[in-house]
Amino acid sequence: MPPGDADLTDLRSDYSAPAAGGRPVPRGVWVVAGLAVVLLAAFGGGYGYHRDELYFQEAGRHPAFGYPDQPPLVPLLAAAVDVLGGGSLWVFRLVPALLIGATVVLGALISREFDGAGRDQVWTAAAVALCSTILGAGHLFSTTTFDLALTTGCVLLLVRALAAPERLPRWVALGALAAVALEVKTLPATVLLCCGVGILLVGPRGVLRRPGLWLAAVIAALGALPNLLWQNAHGWPQFELARAIAAGSSGTSVGRALVVPLQLELTGPVPAVPFVAGLIALLTAARARRWRWIAVGYLVMLAFVVVSGGKPYYLLGFVPAIIAAGVPPVRGWVERGRLRRWGAGALVGVQLVVSAIIALPVVPVSSLASTPVVDINYDAGETVGWDAFTATVERAAAQVPAADRADLVVVASNYGEAGALDLARRPGADLPLVYSGHNGYGLWGPPPGTTNPVLLVGWPDAQAAQLFAGCTLLARVDNGYGVDNDEQEASVRFCTGPVRPWPEIWPRIAFLG
Image (cartoon, rainbow, N blue to C red):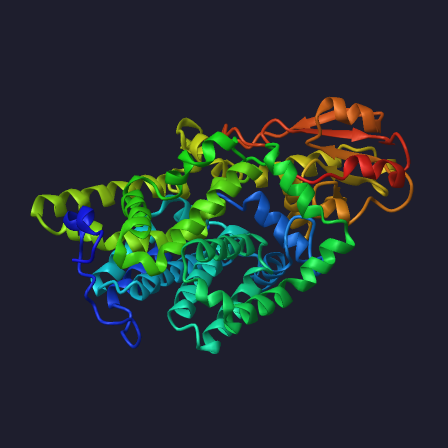
């Protein structure tokens, strides 16, 4: 037994497996990944689009090297998949399902790099697939889903590169994958920088003097360059957005004091056991010393997220690797008795059922309001009622006097509303041109001309009175299911026009959040 491991004796599993190179991925890993994809695909068409998905589809129809709130890759892919899939929600959601399947396999590959036995790799795959936030991410075509898969891949490639730092192709592969990841989010750069801090603090420091690491960094920077240049040309709106999130403008923002306790919400109670065990093993076990930088990098980033006011899930890219480190001792403990095995199996079943109910559209939409699902999972509520919303706006537009319809425009309060109305317009809904001041929509500009009659959607009373004249309430949105989301009871008003010409008033309408 290696020195310093005495405190882990009762939790140790088989670390004596041969080196990772050349070992095939166990069949069980592919089975777990396949089952995760099938489960997500089975519920992929449930409820409706999320507000972010609606926004991404429209953003991708305004191609650019960047957007105020993100790099360009996910919006461009969202628009392409929507077109290629014929507007099918199920096809659209198949992409995130496949990404979660890939994340499950990548977690198992990290376990293999940690010299985990075949069963450790299968257990790691199962634990990653069971994580509540990971399962939820697989239901939505979001930057988080792409970021999770790509960041997990970057951590895997960094582990492999550090195992043989003289092999430049491994560093090139890491740089290339990081370049793609940075076209999804800037968050992977923070993860990799925190990993770099971990390497600096606990080693292997010698790699910092090797050309491979810096070659990977240059390749990643070149990949991020188009978006960085776009951000610079537009005054770095992502910094303003980060401040808005820290101030609580996002529906999933939390207070700084909750970031640490909510780390266990990323996994749920059952995967939290190997997650915590992995942190302990990486920080204390002599056998895991060569990967200690992962745990240190995680703690550095945790501190950064707390200080900066970020969201708990920003650390999700570390979770598969930490779970992989914790599975062997947990598996060794569980397999020492039949009662332990039966108990663990029962807990896994409960975790799967509860996570699926919370993260996926399992509950019939007609019963959703009578459950705590929306209170726990904000995003679930944001996928309900868009058809009723667009129908309400379409009926309100039909009430506008005929003399005003030719120049009528819609100004929605947020990008979800605007995206839903643009989605309805594409197959021919009888709706005016749609505008909004929110994020990318704000950048795409005001309506043409100086003034127009306006169908004002979702605006608070006081703000509507400040910026628009001659307003009459035409309708209020009811999703028909009693689900309390951001659009329930939203107002639809007809206004004769803005109080000032559009070019003057638009800076007061455009906002980031």
